[in-house]
Length: 134
Image 1 (cartoon, rainbow, N blue to C red):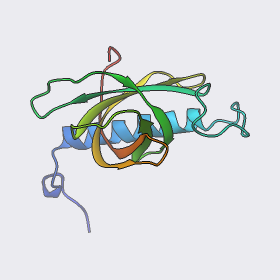
Image 2: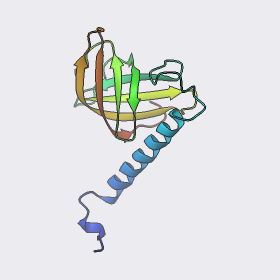
Image 3: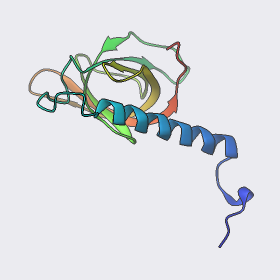
């Protein structure tokens, strides 16, 4: 059965944006997990990846930026540790590392847990890329 353009539930530009997001996240994951990194280092090693978030509310008002420790990320989303609770459901996540070009994306935060170590762990899915100026 051939799928017609108008039968898809999302407009073409939205599907192209989604494909570009997936392509860039896949490239970032591949760079991050490249064999050039020391496999003995844990995924959360600060020497491997620098990251911070900027939370924002439904009106686009940003909150204070804070450093995060990435626990894991893949094509679907990201899990990270942070020192203070996040009160907003959206955030800009910026990742930078030795083999990783600067990567910035909006994340829909869907969960948060407080650990016995006195820090928070949150996670969510990537929803859209953000320009290089982030």
